[in-house]
Image (cartoon, rainbow, N blue to C red; front, side, top):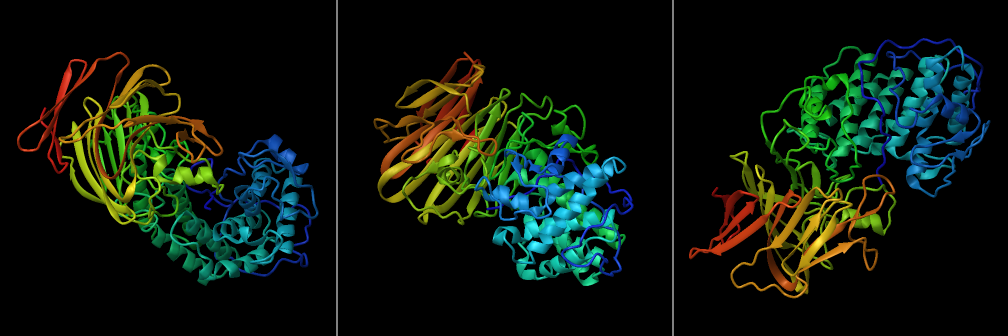
Length: 615
């Protein structure tokens, strides 16, 4: 389970350290009140507000009264001390428990103390009491909270709580950071090169800077600079396999660069800044015309926040719906290392443009889903083909569904073992023109047998042509899945296809199977599943934690040991006539004439699946 504390504000260049007089006397970490003697390497001021500390003054007062609210959960009573129950888990939810033991919520008190130091001196006193009790009850690696509290990410986050308190009261926190820093300095606790590793090493940097341990601080600096090139690849794609985590990685790497420079003086953080710039471009490409990130992997429905650092960039263009920033010139992008293809019909106007994503590349990592070969598409201001999304990290049957191929618009084979670590190869791509692009991808994720998708994305008149092939050892279902958005309604269904209309009634979605020579459509060749819970989940969409919305899935199916399913998805403004003509020539080519209103395009496909557009 991987959980992060999302920051609510975006990085700004850190100002000078806030100097505040000591208020009150607190027993420090179960030892004498005399501060441990240390010579800090440099300042390490409080981090910017995060999702747990960005609460209101009323919430801070409630916390002083013993009531804690972690975003997404109900308020709970934790008491006013002097001892707290660090084994508490009122919701029996590992995510809540990790947030709780990170102590980042304590910064709700320090944030309001700094904002109004003359009015709330008791806030700092209480914050130190809580932190002291944690350290007294939970020695490094132990304590009533158990192993959940000693994931590297959360230990690193706790270190920045103590460094924040130290920046507000220089007599406080050294002993805690000496002990915690020793645990963080053990490289076996480092979570590795992803967002959790970044937080871990920011914590080690904080401990080294406050305690005055140059070995810790230098190691953390070197790791953070190195991770800029591993958490983000050389093209700019985030290594988490979830664009939503790209926002967090972008912010944390920026924070890392700031804290390195703040504590250690001017350092060579150019690599970090270069990688962040590339990542910001990737996030602009990963943003749909509706302004939200494509919900690939463990990505909630979220958007790029506006920040001074995005000024003049493509990210600002998508944030402002095309009113400011840098207008990108390209209409499609291939991230061949991470495995993403993106395409647009237009950046200006932004919102009504057509848009698609296609996944391929390395097998599962970190926050990825089994979504290789999947596509999503937007057009006419609507989401049309969607990813089923993300609803949190509770390990249950629904989480398994969202991770699985069944939750994505792919060729799926229920009952066949799926290897999530299998890579999907981009076999071929034709992106020479802006009006359409063609891709061929292939993998052996299902029981080591080849699964292939050829797909043409038409952009000037939006539609998709897809040809999927797969096989299995024993006869069973082979399904081409098309996940439609929540609110879409099926208005017609037949053996050869289905038509749906978006929830607002503005766009029709036509899904049609195309017969190849020798093929016959069996009964039940096209079906629809919405909101199924047994024998397995199917037909659901989740945009946020613990949200489950029934949404139709059009299933084009065969019961066989091998199958090739050739289909088209054509959206059109509601009521617009859509026509399809299919012919086969003597050379084995299949020719599709697709007409939307008065516009016709002709697509050809060879017997091997290679596609192109004639007109």
